[in-house]
Length: 121
Image 1 (cartoon, one colour):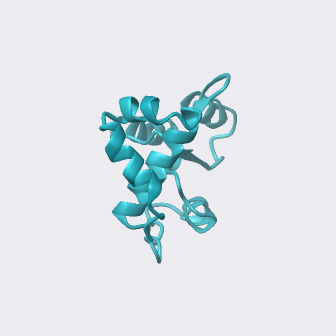
Image 2 (cartoon, rainbow, N blue to C red):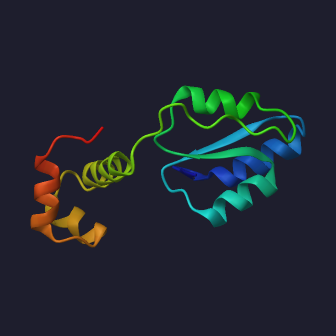
C-alpha cells in the first residue's frame, strides 16, 4: 500500500486501466477493511496483509472467477501476528523502546518484557 512515491491503489488503478485482464494482488503491512474494499473495486483480485508467504500470493493470483483461494494450511497464531507487528514497529522506530511503546500505546516496561521473550509459534 505505502510506496515511496505514492500509493499501491494508484498502481492497481493504472494497471487495470492499461490492461483489464491483468491480475493484481495488494500485499500490505497496513491492512484495513476500507482499503481492502477500495482495492477490490479498483481491480485487485485479492488483498493480503503481511506477513504472507509465497503460497498465499500464488493462490491469490491463480484463483479464477468466483473461486476463492484455499485458506492457508498453517496460519500464524494471533500471538505470532502480534509479535511480528511489534517487531516491525520496533524496527521502524530504530529500535527505540520508548518511541515504539508510545506509538503502540503500550507501557514501556510491558514492551521491554515482550521484546525480551522469544517469538511465539
